[in-house]
Image (cartoon, rainbow, N blue to C red; front, side, top):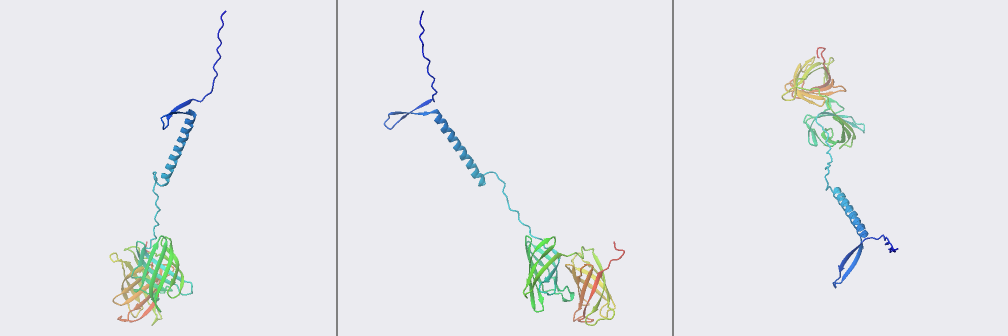
Length: 314
């Protein structure tokens, strides 16, 4: 019987593959170095992570600097308030002085505005005390902030009022004022109710008046008709007067200023200023005849007008 030769099995070794790298030194002598494949894999993974982190940081940098596609944001500009048209202003003194009413028509260019030559400044809202003709009124707006400066003749020289405030709504302004006479207080302004809304508007007024110099026991009566001339934007009209020794009729022209109006008769040399009461349907007015008037020269007085509404008006 033959014997079979026993061969011992080879032991299984868990080895890491070795990569031989042949290098040569400066003397040309070969120097064999070994690196494991596992080390190579770890280094490759490390390099990949570093490169990825660098890319992320670079992208974040350019995005922060506006390098990416982004929408440009602009701060919206603030629109300044509009101060245009007919206005009524009231100055209320904190020192116990009389209130002062100002009636003006404002025009605006950009952030500046000004009252026209027909501006009225009326202490105590008394038509016989109104100043006109030599008044300067100007202002500026910045957003809702408003400043106004008005100068007018006073009993002790020119009075200059500085107003600072803001726009608080459509056509509404208010704030504080100081003047060159040492007074201070508050002021308000509102867009005036149009008493002559269009060229086809005609208002009829009735009332009575009396002379301050030579009052009559029976006050004269007046019927007044006024309308807006479409071509010149001036007021035109006529008046009939009863029981007056001075005049019996008037042919009038003039201007609406705020809720007030001023009209004159060039022939009879009569000047009339009418200021609204709490209601624009009722007016206090003053009249004055020039010193060169043909009848009653230098006479002056005051009265009241009410808009007459006919039962047939509809």
